[in-house]
Every structure is written in structure tokens, then in C-alpha cells.
Image (cartoon, rainbow, N blue to C red; front, side, top):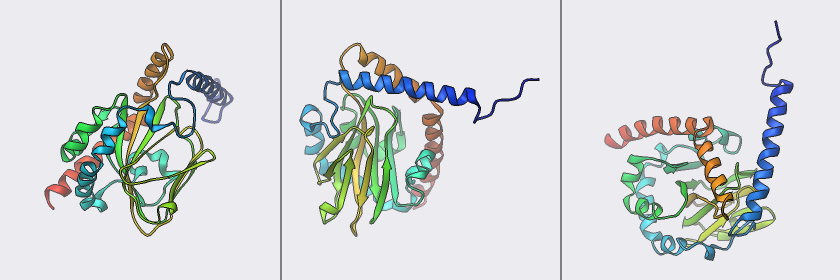
Length: 253
């Protein structure tokens, strides 16, 4: 009888290496055909949808403030995506998802109707959440999973001193401002600090990177495949379980 090949088997290691090499080739193709460059922080002026979000940031913040009344019931990022446990094993990174990889959180969207209307007008929007960092929270260096998406942050609550609340992407550093946007390529190694006494909150969104045809079609296909993966489906399951508990908590509050 042939010996069973486990997780550390040569075949599995070969498949992982081959898959990584294929993804590296795809990401080089994406960088070459990107319509918004390949910088760490693309110019927000290239995205026509950003001014409307910035013009309505106070509307979005008002809905966030209602959500924050239930801060203790909000899930930590690693409660939804267990892969985040190595980055954030504590309870200092809270989330409130409206969309997760194209899947809509109906109840959460109902509680934030104006924010939902605004984000649903963004071309290529895939994931949206309120990302809330407690004072003195540090998210260590890491990279995102796929270059076909770009990450957007709209500053909603930014404590002072602003210079102590920052993000490094590659060798570049940016600071959040209330009502202002940051967009970045999270496949560069990046790291976050909130070295203040206050809470930092942003509207966090992943959008499809604008690409030349036909690479745009390849990107769309890969994103669809990722949406079917265990990585996304497990997060969807964990979020749905949290939603049920949260609905009960809100109903009895």
C-alpha cells in the first residue's frame, strides 16, 4: 500500500511552490497592465468616486458613531478571518463589515443606510468595513493576498497627534486625516501604528484594480475564484454566526 502523503509531503510542497510562482507571474502581469500605476500609494485623483465619499464623510461617521455604541459586541478581525490571528491576537482591532468579498451583510447595511448607498456606487467594490483600532494598537508588517485589488481608507476618527497614527507601505509612510482618503497597494509589505491615547476608525474598502483589457478579464476570474475559496467562505460563515448573536444583543439592549 502506498504511503499516505500528508501536509508536509513533497507533492504538496511542490504544488504550493508552483502555485506561488504562478501567482507571482500573474501579479507581474497586473503591475504591467495597471491603469493606475504600481506605486505603494496611487494618486487618489485617479479615482472618480473618491470625492463623493470625502464630501459625505461626516454622514458616514455619524453612522459609525451609532455602531460604536455596541463596541464591546463588535468582532475582532481575527474572529471573522482566522488568518488574521497572527497579526492581531488581542481585542484591539474591531470590525463592522458591510460587504465581504462581494457578500452583503444585510443587517449591517440596514443599520448604515447612507454609507451603504455611497459604497454601492463605487465601481469594483468588493469588501467594505469600519476598521477600528484601539489606542496603542500595532499591526505588524505583512502583505495582502492579491495585487488585483487595491485598498482604500477614508479617515473618520483620527486621534492626535496625527503623526503618531500612521501606516507604512513599502518604504513610504502616510498619516490618516479625517475626511481624507488613502489608497494603497497592500501587496507591498505594510505596517500600522496607533501610538495615541485615542481610537482610530476608517472606512476600509477593497476595490478591483483598474486594468487594461484582457488582463482585466483574468483579474475578474481570479477574484471570482477567491470568493469561492475556503478563506472567504469560512469568514462568511463566522460573520453570519456573529450577526445572529449581535442581532440578539441589539434587540435586548
